[in-house]
Length: 255
Image (cartoon, rainbow, N blue to C red; front, side, top):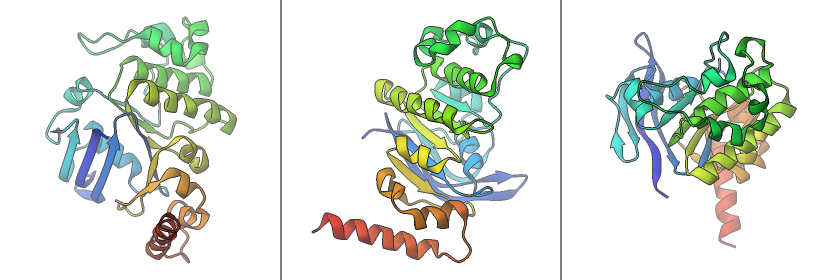
């Protein structure tokens, strides 16, 4: 599978403090990868390092085979990275239609693409973001990102503040978009089961580290490994559980 994104030995953080250490990660074209772990594990920092919002301390960020580690956030966006932050990045005084016209200089957003994947937006084109429900705001944030026709989509906690039933409607749209357009997706999500339900693979992060890739469907059935990584149980040995997880898969596949 052609890689949309590859991180090698990535280290990043804030104000001289390293939050993410020596992280290896890859996302293929048309692949949905979820990044899981407890609060403070470095998930949001990883997304910000990829989009260039923060500078890396070491390692490389490769997009479509090209090292973009020293490229500005604006140029990364021009090269196809769309980043939806956890605060959604909306302008409360602007309408849906205005958001779907608001691009970089020379950029054309495909509003019809946003309406295709989120038909509910077409009925509220003149509604301002500030008076929309949380679910509508998230649809707009996602729709605007899709309208940019990205090659790599970074999603940070799209379920934040939303009822699980809304999240259940949004996540399959992301899966559909990846399948139909070949866009690679890196998803940070607190609803572990829902995220794994649409993902191809997952990475488990803890204390800024975690470069092991897991098959999402296999991980979905390994509750102890999820508990050890995502909930951060102090009485659980994550490394030994990961080894046990991989051993069970190996034994089953070689029987």
